[in-house]
Image: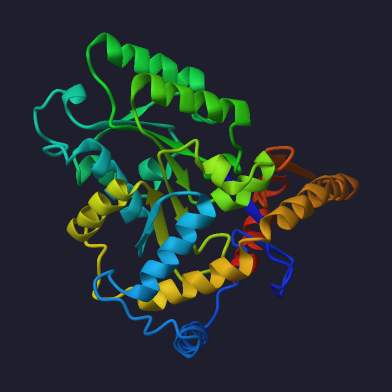
Length: 345
């Protein structure tokens, strides 16, 4: 069965509830006009020219520092895409790349990383970590639940027995393909303990970390201290055009800047993207608690209403952990497909 991703939008959006994305698609003219307005505001406000040159510029570096401070990390580096950000992080932790997916190098002699089966790196990146960089993804745990500390400890123990060690543990917080199901706080802390014990960096795929942060009830910097590094997205729950940041130590971001260039993620300027991302970050970063609570209210109401109409609607997870969850509908396949096509239009 294919679920519907149900996302609650910020209160100021035209629709309080949207399918798949929190923000409706806008004409290019509006998007570019917003970027021009943000650039003009920066200039009038004394922030100077927002145009960076190959990722260097006072305005962009100020934005990176702002985000690093918000998440409690020492340093941040802007990327045009999250795919590039996370591949760069892998390269930093591995100290390079493997020789390619087709060589005869033994599997565990190549750079490797621990990951869950539904990770974005495995499902939506054309297998770039393996095919482009020569990494071996060590897929552990079960496909239908989050990666657990027990899963990681079992794999780390197995590797240690043969003198091997992955370059990092890549943990998605929350798991997008599981309806944004996520680990409990005590499980995250156990992940941190295991990372320290085995001396392996713990990296968070935090594409929706802002969305799930209210679930943990901790200040954001305290939550992020559990991870050596993390990536955050500006277009998903925040509504920026496109863009991401890799956060961590100055050493991680300095080395990641080199890999950003090598991976083709360093265009002449990222100003239009970064301007949109900063505006979205400032506008919506504080909206996620209210959006999560709204979905918590809506989930049982929608389920009971569907039952009253003779249908069936199931949320996964049953109690949403953030402002996004998966919804399964029971009904005639043709009718559901027609309704989905109408919504997409």
